[in-house]
Length: 454
Image (cartoon, rainbow, N blue to C red; front, side, top):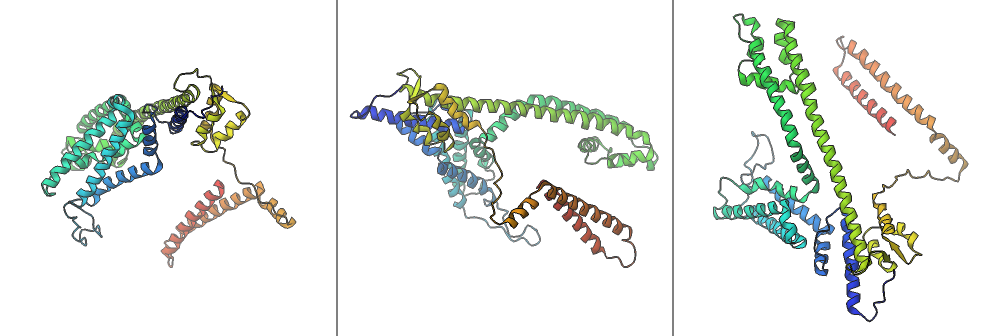
């Protein structure tokens, strides 16, 4: 359908411009997978686009990095030229008020960020957002703690706001939020497996203390002295064995006395390491996989809502008309935000006066298509000699020959290195030769991997 002319009607022209701006913002929300639950009046739209501009977001990220880096220079500072305590000079202690002034500036920026967010989404959405409520609490506690620090002339014993600073990074990162939410959903199932691991450790700790108890023969007390002297020592040794970090050292003293003792350690490793630990890994993987699927579905829903909202405001002017089509004069609204891919996809509708809802959605399906990366074409030469050389060196069999030569080089170096190991104890052998041969092997293996991957 075509829109009526707006010439000589300033109010209608203003409304038309507002609808286009709303459509542009909704399309930007769809591209960035953002929620469309925000204010849509003219002033709020300008503020919204300014807030999500690249400069503003980079500035907010820089502010977060700055407030996190303050921990390296604040009192008590450990920043010095040398890390060796023998040569380390007295660390530089910033004067009271320097880092506090920088931190106050960062907190004011965070407060401004919260004010803009809360204004744009409105009070109803603000009450539903737990992250923004937590944002308010963290900023308030940080301001109170900052005032206490200044009033005590930077001589306070504890700074609570230091513990709260990572929250600013979590609140501003959607990936961090998704990870924490996934961990929260995974905790109940993880807790059950961790309980099984704890019972497994306690059971085998008791059995181990009974098996490797202290005897009258000092020669048979090696296992007891090293790993099973007390309950804490036994539990720690088996906890380390659960990760196979002290395997098989933990069983060597007992194995030297009687080979049958190895059954205890084998049973512990099979049940704990290869069953319960793998079960824990499978649960974590399954939960993260399911949450990733839900996250992708949520992102797709947000994109479709943004596209539908853009079509709605372009087609019916605030729901006053039936959402059947979008006039040709409105197609430039998404060309301002979507780059070259969507305008190119919209050229097929250039000769049509309007597009319906399905055509409008089909255009935005181009956003979900991956670009195919192709190798650049081979250069064209006019000389027959260069053309012939290009055919020869670009042939597949030449790559196979290069891989074969690289593999033969690695095998020859390895054989030579084996020969050097046999004669390294002979008189006149230089230890540096062995070092050079080792470097040659590493270099040859690296070149072979590069050759195969290319």
